Structures are given as structure tokens and as C-alpha cells.
Image (cartoon, rainbow, N blue to C red; front, side, top):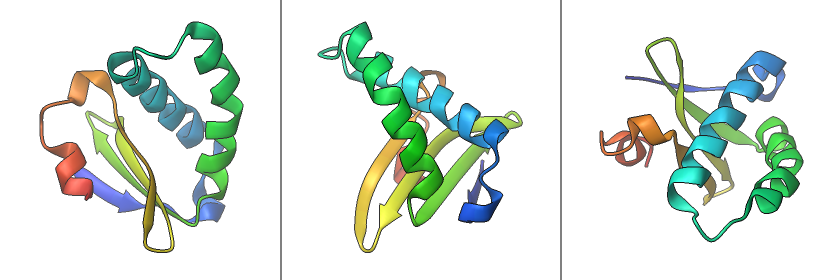
Length: 95
């Protein structure tokens, strides 16, 4: 597991797309109260947040994003682990 902090200027489209896939996988596995329309509605806001959140840590496994944590100040604003990587302690490592 590799945890890296990604500066705003390094958040290229490929990375953001990969992190959006992590978000969607995580949401579909854990947020069963959300409907498909909700996920579609939220996606652009999550994409914008991934580009703008001041502090972003990413975890890569098997050469692709597996999880991320975003912070603003001392507050954790987002923490998502892709469904296939859940239960491996990645979220705890990010904390």
C-alpha cells in the first residue's frame, strides 16, 4: 500500500477519474439508501471537491487508486475505499 498526498496542481483528469471510480464503488457498497439518480446527481460535486479540497491523500494498490481521504483544516471531509479493497485496513491507515 502506498499513501501519497496529491497537491492541487497534480490532480490531473486521469487521477480524478480514478478517484471518482473509487467513490462510486464505495458509495454503491455502503450507501444503499442512495438511488441511482442520487449517485448521478452527486458525481459532479464529488469531482469538483476532489479537484479543490485543500489536502488530499490517495492510496494505490495494484497500480490504481484504491482509496482517498480529503481534508479541509482539521476536518476530514471525505474518506472512501473502493469496494474490492474494503476490510484491509486502508481506511484506518489513512486516518
